[in-house]
Image (cartoon, protein in one colour):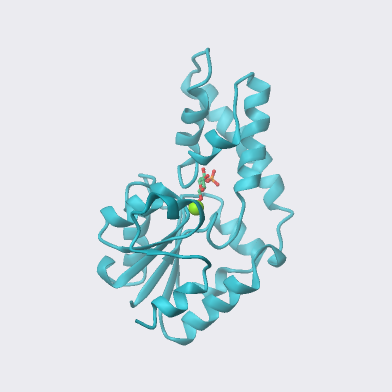
Length: 211
Ligand code: B16
Ligand code: MG
């Protein structure tokens, strides 16, 4: 394993509760039913596609301009929550694992669908651990398309077959497999049973990389 590409939300930090609260506020205002089960379908999925999933429950049709405004409204609520984040929102286990992997000369990248990745990395003080960042700002196709991981591997100057993708979303594991990467599932993604490795915690990566 020459490189590891980490998903952000659900792997390195946990902003899913902020995504949920922001979408819930919008859905309530529009009178659309939304719950945590529907929210699970939004993991790893882009903002625009997430909105389409929420609008499946709407009786009204909305124009592209209205949809763009809804997505912006949700993002403003979400970013207000991100502003309150700090380095304390990242566990010691995550920081120690990233440090030890770097000591072993494994190249590290972020591969996230989120356009807010730069803000999250800055607030949590995580940016310094990574050789490259590929995120929602440099892709046109969201997971399960492998584009975000291909770009991350390219930034690291590594072939997909030399990299491991670490993901909490089924869409992310599918993207990794489609791109020819080895995959490690954590959290929600473990139950799909498709990943090369199932992690109980992120520090399990240290024994996988001993292989
Ligand atoms: P944004 P990840 C994903 O992050 C989230 O899991 C997903 O819920 C969100 O819709 C997507 O980012 C886009 O986020 O609205 O901030 O651009 O898991 O790929 O790190
Ligand atoms: Mg995720």
